[in-house]
Length: 401
Image 1 (cartoon, rainbow, N blue to C red):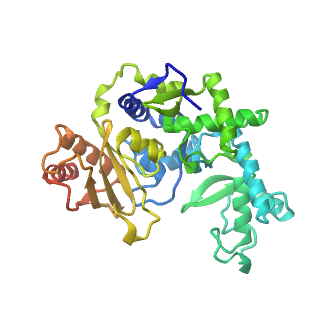
Image 2 (cartoon, rainbow, N blue to C red; image 1 turned 45 degrees about the vertical axis):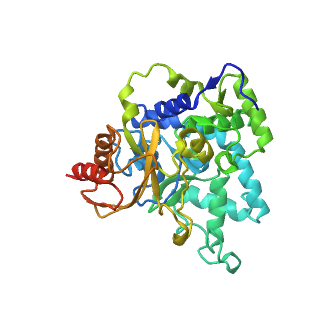
Image 3 (cartoon, helix red, strand yellow; image 1 turned 120 degrees about the vertical axis):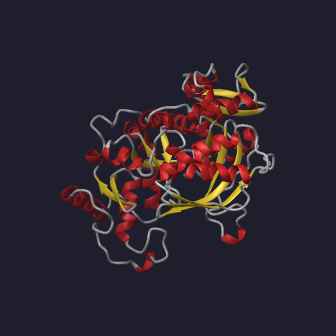
């Protein structure tokens, strides 16, 4: 698909749009509505991915605040979007295509969500209320399932299939483990819209993916899109969304992008220009950097998440966070926080940053960001690596006082 004439942006304008869209000041509930979906990942050396996504956008956010937003306030529920995600309960109606797609996939693997044993599990949940896989179904191991991603218990496979198919939902988590319950007991009243057509649901999924990213290339990797339909059908759906004004096509110096009217409005005069000079530490799965190819093209930042690589093959580190200063990426760092101590295992400046003489304003912005990051983690002690440079080292040290 090609961008319509008249909707063109320079790379500089596209960068400005993304920074203003993602990081304009707002309360937690507003940020959740703006993004629409937040990818979930349980690894947590400095907080989980939802924690890191939200701390970069919400002033005063503290590690774990998303748990209350999801399981207390029900501003978010667990679902499937770009992999396991947190979505708004009002979006549950749009999950139907995912639910049917997963039910078919599980059936092909010998797990039928309509089988009697699956119905028995749902009945057990209905009778006893929220429970984890340790409390539901047959706890015996099936030798045929040894080595499986979901473990050797057939009941656990059934529970995951029922969750994927929307027959069960996550009521809360126990040590990261799902506590399953019926959708009608998890979703706030009125969150489901069964009258929606498949076409309407798929359009919402496509628009929501673009909404979370702010700008997204139609040509982005399949892992970025991961929808329950072929790419050709996605393009037809996007064309309808563009015709209806839900999406906008852009040409950014020869590359096609999709965006939303809300994101495009960020190019209007900014009422808070100072926000563009802040430093932010981004999550490895932050929606701003989902499309790694698009980020490389717009920002000149080549980001690779090496968490699943063997240690000997890592260049940057295990759990590396990009560092954004205004509209440019200036560094990346690997870190962990344990028992109140934040340890920066490695810090890598981008090639255009000289550690011995940082650009004007960067050290001050880094100090503010470092202080907010320590507060977010509840850390009172700090261990710093080599390679920071004197100004950055002092900025972190001042932040920790």
